[in-house]
Image (cartoon, rainbow, N blue to C red; front, side):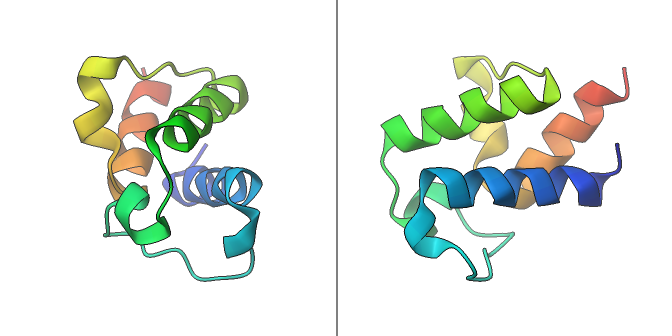
Length: 82
C-alpha cells in the first residue's frame, strides 16, 4: 500500500468519525485533534478504525507520532513495509 493510499484511508476514516467535515480538505500538516476539533475519544476511534483497516496497532506511547495526517501516513507506511 502506498503512502497516498494510506492517506486516503486516514481521511475516509476521519470522515466516518467526524462526518461534519466530509468533503472538506483535511490539513495534512496540522494536528488532527485541534484542526478538526475532535476529542480524545474520537481520536482513539480513528486509530481503532485504522487498526481494523490496516492491521497496524498504535500503542499509546506512539500517539505523539500520529498527530497529523502526514505523520500518521508515515507511521503506518513504515509499519506496513516491515
